[in-house]
Image 1 (spheres, each protein chain N blue to C red):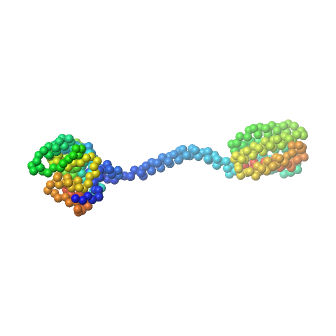
Image 2 (cartoon, chains in turn yellow, blue; image 1 turned 90 degrees about the horizontal axis):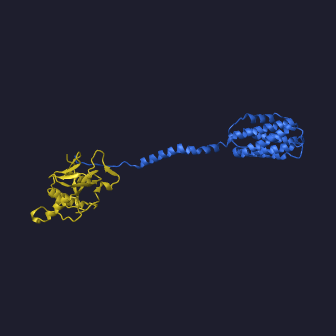
Length: 169
Length: 191
């Protein structure tokens, strides 16, 4: 796994960029999973400048989700899917935009394809950490076990044109 | 639709510059123009470019220039010329906006004394004193408002100093008339 030049930026890092007109700024919106359980709230927007759009939501997860994650470690590894080891304070995760729908009336983000357990087992990070391609390639197979993710070929624009990042109606 | 596009912010700097420009322009037109008024007044000190055409001054100049007899001088002429000159200097001071009241009042006093006592042997004293006051007033007006007429003013002062207060007026016709003519020349250029 090899990191290329930085391809992800928090929108708030880019002082000369903003959410485009007529698009929702979903920061602080509640994130709901496929089981209608609250995952957390959107804390940041991760954008790719080449694609000129948000490609991930940075979600600050609820304590309950972290607790659920701890419980999964209590089960033997051979009895469930592989899970990551998260340290104390690592309470952020990213969700690809292709996995969510937006309820602009109620200011909620729905992720109907991914359930609570999957989120609970996702590798998380501490707020403020710079996100590298290696982290993306670690997390994406966890969300999409059947898909292959290859960082070696294509531009950022091509990479983020995959269905995992493209808008859902 | 779960798409969130981003766009570049419109640059703020041109707007800031525009606002500053408008602010400066407003300041320039409303405040600067007020402060420039004294400068315009200073420009007005070049009064030589402006024709005042004051009637009193013209009257004196005409009176002096119409006297072509250089050797003739009597008390009536001297008295009238002095009064007309005093009025002309007073009028010129008013045109130029220069205060010469003190000099003028003294000159008027001397002119009146000559008129009231036409045979006094002290006439040359009075003429000299009046000429001193009037030439000083003219010099002050010239220095303040007509810097170009320095030479003419020097001529007037020179003519004044040529009048000997110890000698009878009738014995120094040329000097007295020279003073009146130099003063007329200076006033004519001011006017």
